[in-house]
Length: 279
Ligand code: DHB
Ligand code: FE
Image (cartoon, rainbow, N blue to C red; front, side, top):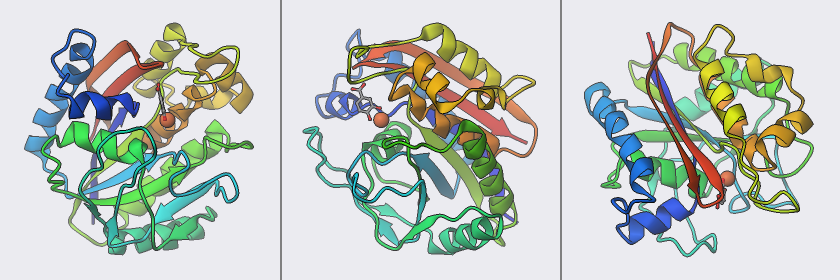
C-alpha cells in the first residue's frame, strides 16, 4: 500500500516567482524566506517521494467566479501553467498520476466528499511556486495530483470540513494499491489581506499559534473558529490557512515537526513554512 511520507505547508505569494526570475534569492529581504527551504530540499533528496498530492486554492486561472467548486481534483495526465497576469515566467508542465487521481475520486465520493473532477486543469501560482521552491531546477521528479479548495468566493467550506477532507484524503492514499511514497503539500497563507480597508493586515500572534497547533496535542484547534472569525484573525486571504489544516489532517501516523520558518513580510503576506514527517 502507498505511504504518506509527510506534509509540507508553505505560502505561495506570486512575488516569489518574480524573485526567482530575477535571481534575488540572496537579497536581504528575500534571503530569510528562500533559506528556509534549504533543509526541506535536503529532506526531499533523502526521502525521494514519488507523488505529490497538492492542496491549494485556484485564484481565477482554472475556475472563475462564474463556476466555483468548493472542492475539485485533477484527473489529468499532465497539468500546465498559464499566464495569470502577474508577469512571472511560466514553468514546465507537470506529470499527473491518473491512477491515484481516480482512486482518490472513488474513495472520496464513497466517503461523502462530492468533488468536481477535472480531466483538464490548468494550475496557477499556488501550485507552481511551491513546486519551484522544492525543486528549483524545475525538472519535477514527481507525479502530481492537484486538489483545490475554494477560499476565493463565499461561501467557503468550514475549517472543520477541510480537516475532514484532509483525513479522508489521508485514508484514501493509504488504501491506494501502490508502493509509492506520497508527499502532501498544502499552500497558502499565512495571514494576509490584499484588499479593502484592512489591506496589509498581518497577525503574527495568530500565525504562530496556528503553526504550533498543527504539531501540538490539538491539531484540530483551528476548527473551533468560524470562517468569519478566521478571516477576522488572519485576513481575507489569510483564510488560505485552510490548506495547511487539510494537509496536516492527511497525516495518520506519528507526526513530527522537522523544520519551520516564518518571515514577515513577503509582498503583503506573512510567509510560513513547515515540514512535518509522518511515521
Ligand atoms: C499575494 C498573496 C497570495 O496568497 C496571492 O495568492 C496573491 C498575492 C501577495 O501577498 O502579494
Ligand atoms: Fe493566494
